Length: 303
Length: 279
Image (cartoon, rainbow over all chains, first blue to last red; front, side):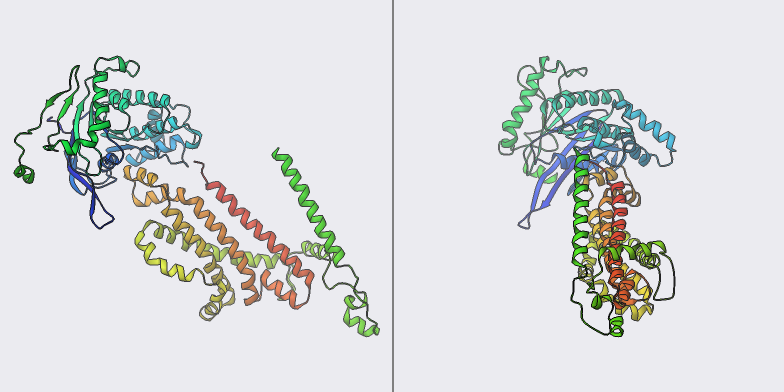
């Protein structure tokens, strides 16, 4: 864990409560990812997943802590971090080409029209929308709209791609094909990606690391699950892999029961040293265990 | 299906219009009592007294007079006798100028209010107080300060068209979807470029709706304003013809005010359709 391309360092997000106090969505959250990895956050609604992503995108600010990307603390939004929105957020008065071009001209102000068009076209082709360049979003299906969203995000060649439940509004078939597309593109380009999802299978298929968050308010990152499935996994026969059910059951178990009881049952949870779990054929094994025994109140304060 | 509906609607419209003309014609036929009088006195009294003709002109009188006006709309026989085209031209020019000034003021100010919560709150009390004031109430103040009746009328048009545009612009700007703003933010689009490339197109339908309401109000107000300031314009024409007791001309003026108002509204409706985007 030496390469920390993305490093979320002790961030917290609090909102003013109704009684004048503060409601904490999450506290002291630490999370890091190396370059080229695909990370997925899974948790129930209200655990602050979207807030984490918005903070990473620069759309929201943490009440405490910092986020470091590629050696620099982030400040506001950046063209280095592209966001694929859940609601695709296309500008309805622009065509497909217009929407992608808008992003391209935002990144490269001095490019002439032809260069912008050629660059945008390349990414429209990449997501398989060749021929629909001059359609408006209202003429596209949900899946096609999200393809435009992906093309727009990729067209600015970001360091990180941030996705907030990008496929949750799509039907199962479309979702599957788009997952294939995203995985293909990320593998081909070595794109670092961070995604929020509700869908366990989506996380298993796409992610190298799955971050499990407990229920909010006061949510914590409970554990990091390393995906044991081979890199060349295919969506078609994913469920035939011997480790698939071990992994899936582990995550589902967490979502069904442990996400609720985690705070009460695990007392010595150290947010800076979250256990990394790699589900195997038998019981899940903890590959990097936190220094649970030494954790004392003094240490907690020092942190 | 739709074409047959339109056809049937047109038939009903024409039938209603014909019925209206028929009733009007019958109601204004000469049926009044004829008083006995000397020929000299009868000359002074006119047809209403001698032939029992209704003082209200019938559709045929109005049609004949209208034809007369349409034949020479731009004649000018001195201050009290100008063609209807000239009078309407003056009114449209005043409305156009006052409305144009209102657009220049209301749309940038609406953007400011919509984009800045500070200005929104700070300017709100002024807008709340100024908005319900009848535009004609400004007239004496305008006449006193500007000392020119024609410019005062333009000012009155300005003040009445500014509010709907201002409110609609600020509402449209403030109600732009958060996700579109976020797209611009993640693409590091600056405030000015964001205002023109995201907020303006997103708020354009609302802004144009405000402009459409404004042109309607401006056209309502110009008639009253010109009755007050006098001199030229369709409003002055109506009042002048009332003083001349020419009900025929008053009816013609009413008809033309309606038609011009409809055309102005249609023009703005077309612009609104141009900027409306399907979602």
